[in-house]
Length: 537
Image (cartoon, rainbow, N blue to C red; front, side, top):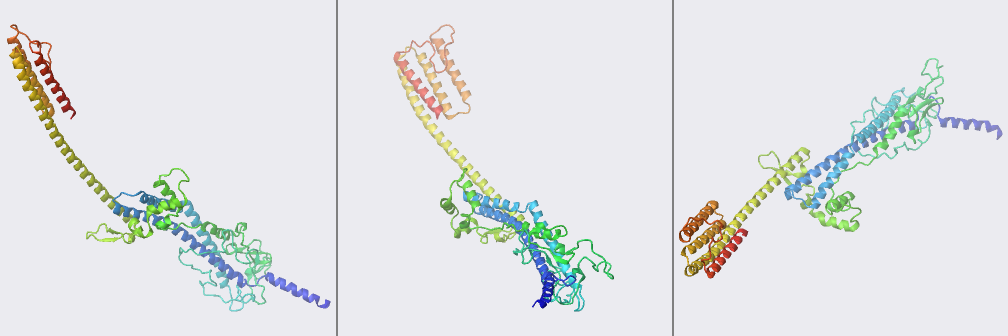
């Protein structure tokens, strides 16, 4: 048993050496296909980054379109007069647009674009290295890539430009926006099996295929190939730093912690860390139904602010708030008539068309066309409002004229009543004054004063345009008559009364009987009340 011990030790040492890989053997099948898999994941990461950008910009344009279409629908159906719930819905779409715009801010776009660039650079470096090794092959004798796992067998080269394995394509095609998952790219590294440690990248198989790329740095035939007596002083890195050459041969880096990758692997490091800058969930556009808006926190806040006029927090909450929103928005089946729905049933004119053609509002995607259509309906609303104002103004003028005619008629009635009362008292005055007064001229003077007073009141009541002239004539006539008769019948010498003004009997009045003075006082009282009443009406 002990005599066989050296043989067993040699066998164990041989197995251990083969497990580490033999320098100058081919790159193991699992390593180079695994490298292509990593390259394919990085290509998927580029597509997801493109999806983040297009989704963000798409959400912005979609929310702008939704805002404009909703605004157009309200202008068309309500002529610009909105309910508080409709105003809240417009504000909701405006705020969602602003939120989507924040996701395409310059700094965020640049970060995403940089992540796409880094992922693409790492994928290109890995794929380019594997394709190069694939072309370094003889006809079935030697190569740099292992054909079969664990055999160290030579691999026949593929046509130039083709991919030795999926993920190492030379031309991945145009960048497409696809939200493809890459679970092995954690944002901090690569979590695929066996990538948690550095590992030999040369086959331990028993085949005879050889490749200088996996040979150790000492006596490497890359320098002075004929003699092979030179040592490589540097630290060659390949595939963006995925593979590196050290004293034992070609190795592959551990990738579970990308931040720990040192110089020489910076391209791969940035490619792995790019996942952390792309994994943010993009804001997608969604036209929510009323039942969905009741549970939307953003809409609830807007509804409380605009509809409920709440200025303090927390305010109305829970089922009570949900019920208020449901009552304001209505049921989902009525959303087409209340809010336009998907706008497929809303017909709008084709602006610029001469035949009056119409189109579905849902089919318009141009922001310019939607804005022009909104202005079209806003101008219609303004025109309708102006027309209503003019009609109401005309109605007010008509009502005012009717009121004035009615007031004028009432004023005439008052004049007739006042004139009748005044005339009655006037004639009573004459009938009483003449028999009782010792002076006919005094009676005549009082009659003239009453007549003047009556004419002034009539002119005021009917708003006679030449009232000042009429007033002057009446006053002159009454003064002249009073002065003349007093001068002729009472005073032989020239005399003009000095203490007199309209409405007051001239002196002397002692010749009037007490009964005449009482009647005259009553007449003046009637005149005074009539004058006040006319001025008020």
